[in-house]
Image (cartoon, rainbow, N blue to C red; front, side, top):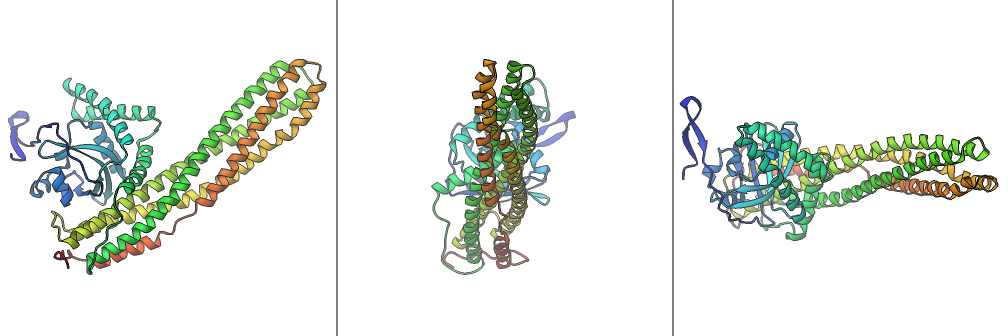
Length: 470
């Protein structure tokens, strides 16, 4: 069937429209070690693709190249997801999503898609989803959003406005799932996918031989080792940052209990007495502690977000490096695809370098934020420590107070003060650990390997693909 046909548009004018197959209900899977590659121009027109894309999309390269990427769009996918994609890309940021695609024969195949701005183009690397829980969650969101879009279209709403409505619904559902922004979701999803993929795929590929693509593969192997170390390092940093955020939430709750207890004590005690004077001092200290705590909450949330973003960028760099290795292996094996492998590798190297540099910037910010948070946590811990020293004096005063309500309140006062101290000490210890882990990474070795790859491929023109066994 021809890919395009002519239909009558507005005012009777002939327009060129794309003919997509109807979904058949059949599905086929992507192998764990297969990576799709494609680039598009700013309008989404496919410029390059690899043999995996051609084979699993089930279109010949002659039909894929030059067609809009929406040629493989499945009708179950909400327009809001694609509106989000374009909004993200046009802001200069990478995008990721779980996507159901429609192959040329009407079957469905599912990918975890990444798209990266690359000058005036967009580069996409897609893989098999390896986290079924995240895939199921994404599909449940899509299933909730898509019917509303279709209903809006049936009422005569434009496709653009229906997608805008779907995007708003998607954002609402994400917040309900605990993600304030879609960025937070993809910052968590991509590293999780990469770790899961590493568990089910074979070791990094190797080939015997020599020549430019053998040199490319050797550099990619060294980059793989470096990024694996970084992913492990950033995983430890992320876990500590998450624990810090949980710790500050715990301390915030304890401070709230302290405020409530102080107000209740004031109401129970009434009038002037030595112990009430001490309680009034404690109440004023709680306000100071609360103010400092709020500032630390903001800093720790910024630290956590910076850690998530840096880890995401390294995971994306690692995925692009895997695609470099796949192209190099295909070139060495003599696999002929629709795109010159040298040109594709150059695109991947450019994106990979951008990710590594941006991650390095985030990690410098992490180190600064972690050091500042550690200092503030120490100050907060010292401030919370002060009421603890007053507890024994308060107990003595309460024992001599004729009002039994005052004596009855003292155990609760002591409990919240001691809990606050314990929470603050634990938080300071976590902040010190985070400060020690959050050291800037030396990205120079990876950048050197990227220069070697470009040198192996030559600065101009394509590199000839060797015959099998070369």
